[in-house]
Structures are given as C-alpha cells and as structure tokens.
Amino acid sequence: MTVVHDNLEDTEAKMRAHDVNVFYGSKQAIDSVSIDIPQKYVTAFIGPSGCGKSTFLRCLNRMNDTIPAARVEGEITLDGENIYDPKLDVVQLRARVGMVFQKPNPFPKSIYENIAYGPKIHGFAEGKDELDAIVEKSLRRAGLWEEVKDRLTDSGTALSGGQQQRLCIARAIAVDPEVILMDEPCSALDPIATAKIEELIADLSGRYAIVIVTHSMQQAARVSQRTAFFHLGKMVEYGRTSDIFTNPLEQRTQDYITGRYG
Ligand SMILES: Nc1ncnc2c1ncn2[C@@H]1O[C@H](COP(=O)(O)OP(=O)(O)OP(=O)(O)O)[C@@H](O)[C@H]1O
Image (cartoon, rainbow, N blue to C red):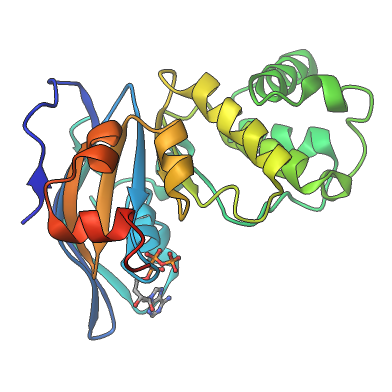
C-alpha cells in the first residue's frame, strides 16, 4: 500500500497506473504500483538502487516490451486509453510519451537529421520549409538553437555531453509529445550541463507532463513538484516534493532522505 499524502489538490491526470506488477522471468521487480501522473507537474521517482524506478518508468511508454523476459500486469492509461491494448500502435505511443535516457544517445547523423527524422516518419511536415521550422522550434525549446544554428550539418555526436542530451530532448519534443520520461538524464553530465538540463525541465514543465527518475535528492527537490519514493519494488509514499523531503510520513522514506541507505 502506498501512503498518498492527503493534501494534494485535484489535478488532471495525464497518465494513470493501476495495480501494476512487473516481472523479469520469475523475479518480481514492481509490486502493485498505482499512481496518477499529473498533467501540469514534474513528478520525480526516487529510491535506492534496484528499487524499480527505471522499470516502472519504462512501463509508461512500453519500453519494457523490448526486454524479452519482462512481463507487465495491471492497467496504465494515457488520457483514459489503455496503453497495453494490443490494438494500440506502440510507435505512436512512444511519440506521445517520449523518453530521454541516462546516456545521451543521438543518432550518428547530423544535428538537423536527429531532429527531422521523427517528424518525417510520422508525416508531421509537408515539405522542407515545414521541416526546417520544426527543427528550429524544437531546438529553441530545448535551449540549443543559438549554440547549433550555424552547424546543423555537423554530426550530433560531435556535440558536448550536455548539448547531446539537449539534442535528445529536442528530438523528443519534435514529435509533439504529451509526456516526457527522463531516466536519470543528468547522471553522465557535469554540474554546469546538469544545471542547464534542470533549467530546461523547469521551462518545459506545464507544457508536457514530465516524469524524472533521479538518484539525486537535491535534483528531485529542485525540479519536481511531486515525488514518489520507491523501495524494493513498491511505491512507499507519494506527495508534494516539499512534503516528502521535509515531512515524510513513512519511516522508510525518512531513512532514505536522511541518507540511512541508498
Ligand atoms: N533487463 C532486466 N532483466 C532482469 N532483471 C532486471 C532487468 N532490469 C532490471 N532488473 C532488475 O529489476 C530490479 C529493478 O531494477 P531497476 O533498474 O528498475 O531499478 P532502479 O531503481 O531503476 O535502479 P537504479 O537506480 O540502480 O537504476 C532490480 O533487481 C534489477 O536487477
């Protein structure tokens, strides 16, 4: 049972997970997790290593489908629609629920092509002008345009780590997502690049529902308004970020935030 703080105002849920269990073969990694992902906030998943944060995050856009041993049970909806419906187009789902990974993973193509690829395959642009406009808008929104506008034909992999991560965020934005999932997006970055990504998350929040897995409690406190604490595959506690860090209701949350384990 998750302890959900009772001072949360009613907010529109963009995604809803109900009684989700995940198994890798016979090993259970997620145990009966239910959560509403609010439309207008950044939600942080925190907890000690191996508690299932990434596994649960990957359920939200069916990335676990790519792991043969993984089996997901329960219900997850996006705007009320079951995302595990066999009739659902998973490629479309992953455009609506984009993902940014721990290690920046631009395609080994030009900066321009990294952004243009998604809109092209999804048929978002009629011609070159429209595509150019999407590329510019996405790079601007990701705070990267000024740095790359004169070198759009350079390879995406030639950028710095922090720029590559913003390129990956721009790539997710280019297909007009509704939710952006971020799995420890700053863990490979230095403090300056991290600060830029955190600023970017603040700029993007409200426009997209954002869920971030982070090992850094300081980062969760800085970027999120809601926090879920995971432990041993269970979601132990969920509430306003400020309350989770200053007034946790559960002993296990208290132990984690005071550094007793993790
Ligand atoms: N592909 C996989 N196959 C088998 N077991 C896995 C796989 N991925 C994760 N697990 C196991 O599932 C459990 C949850 O792992 P997960 O990576 O979701 O945790 P996490 O909280 O994100 O950890 P970390 O913070 O270290 O990234 C762990 O016991 C892990 O070993």
